[in-house]
Length: 219
Ligand SMILES: O=P(O)(O)OC[C@H]1O[C@](O)(CO)[C@@H](O)[C@@H]1O
Ligand SMILES: [Fe+2]
Image (cartoon, rainbow, N blue to C red; front, top):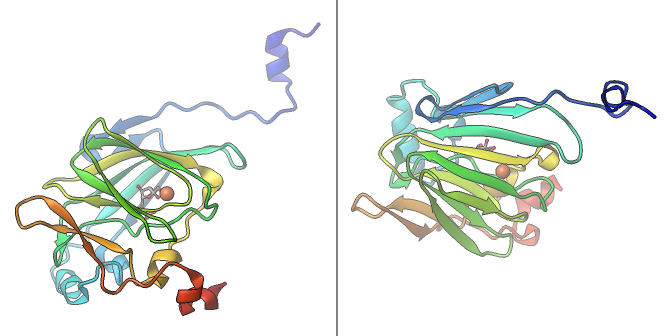
């Protein structure tokens, strides 16, 4: 009989050391993370519909990141998770609230969890066949984004919006889906009263590849 401790120590099965993670919402940090990326206003050309407002904002840009992500990915392959904290600074470009680029997972069936840590935001989700949903996220609220939904986080509050997220590492991200469609179908805009509203994006073309020459050309 093999001693259980030996079984683990001598196991031919790859074994990764567990990691403790501590979100620090106030600073948009994830202590214990092993990756960080930052996005700047200059990275977001074409993301906001009001291009003149984006250019004007760039002339006054502080050069600081507008959103950033700290994450932990310690395994690859099927079943491995990426767990992270993402923070979007408050702001508006034209009447659209500050937001991430948004994507669909390359593996369309991959789902994702978001959990509000601080601030006030909206998870905007759309399907390839034209359904839209928006769920508000405040501290303590989780959103379960199923597979097959294009998703983007939007900060609709006066301060930074920070979430904890988790998705399968091998899900990947396809950013072209939104770009090639002229943006998401809905815009998250100010309601003129300190709140938010959804408005149709006049530049949006269908996500369907046959309505979308750029996408056809890339496939
Ligand atoms: O990857 P994007 O669309 O730029 O936005 C960043 C957000 O999406 C995620 O990549 C997770 O899907 C998080 O890192 C973060 O909430
Ligand atoms: Fe995602």
